[in-house]
Length: 361
View 1 (spheres, rainbow, N blue to C red):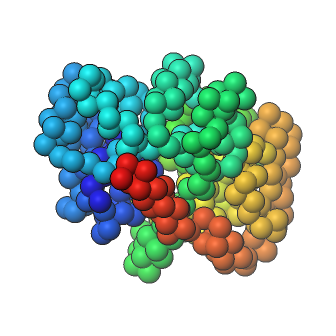
View 2 (cartoon, helix red, strand yellow):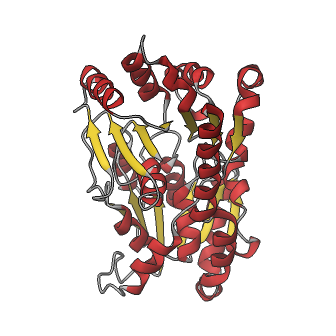
């Protein structure tokens, strides 16, 4: 099977590469095309091209690839790259649309209006649509679902637990947290309004605890968050580490006591799955994707992401119960693997790919 994968960017957090491409690297002949140049080292079994940030160059690259190769599947990971693909096959190779799979990687309400429009247009044209979980499927507005429901299925995103095991087995000497903090907390995600880091900072200002909170990620709201963090008094320590590699993020999770996400919206949050398997106690916003993950009740607190007092109370809980929290690190591992195995996800996607090939035959 020859597969062409279209993705907006290849970076350390890209699920299209980390979950899909690496997952299929030994079983499918894959070619990836992204708009900007890739920001991660690519496995030698996978061919990769890019448009160097130019729509016209990406279109040219795609036109040349589809002219030279008979792809069995075209997997599109967002509407914008889907539009560029459409321009590259118009007007003589529109038959390739019969080979297309589109994955909706987020909940509909947190997607920008422009991207909603682009997604909807490409979803109308694609042969199969897969949402990254049940909550993502249910977030699609009824009027849009009316047009696409017959070709849409939900496949829960999986995570690579073997990658976490490999990192843990290295037994790295490096400590990612300072030694004087009693509790270690990690918060991973782009700095934007949706990821909602500011609400945690406000809760920490109201209710200081003896802890270090390490924020991983970058984005437009990072400076604002850094400026606000200076208002949080001791003993709380707030550290910003920017965008780091996936392996380094997992190392933080393996060392952390607590993982917090107060996100206002998600697709299927891979970082939550990884942190759960790594042994972190979870404080999660009460949104459908987090509820779908459903960590064991003794390893998770759900909070209203708009209620600072509720978040502050959750910080009190971890302060008062940190010994018990540390002793239960392995309680979530079985739940994680049984429900969110990468292998289960890949098997279901392979069935989608196979069904497309059968339809064409």
